[in-house]
Image (cartoon, rainbow over all chains, first blue to last red; front, side, top):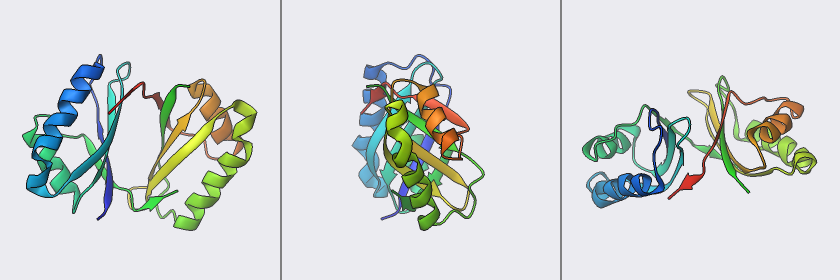
Length: 82
Length: 82
């Protein structure tokens, strides 16, 4: 399944607890779109959050993020990996 | 050691081989700054490359990327991870 990296901006001040809650909200409904969120990283200072997932499409990733209440600002397939 | 995500833009058309070469160029000199590049992901279509590393600072990451010939456009510490 293709891999995607998505980026959320404007999350300045995000806490470890808030990141966990947001991630869990994605995990709770990811099966609806066949998405598997694998990892998320956050920088509370700049407010950037990166999420790595396996999904059939960027739209599938975005539908889960939207339903969970935090649409991504950018979603890129990352077919190359080293 | 803190973890960092950096982003390179404008790498449109990057191949698996070019990504590997760029990553290997970082690995070859990363010890000079005590950086450990762990993973890189690329989207040849949008030209975005993400690199995940352990480093003492964003400056250390950038010094390696600059010496290797591909300075990053953004580098963010990612102290939160789920």
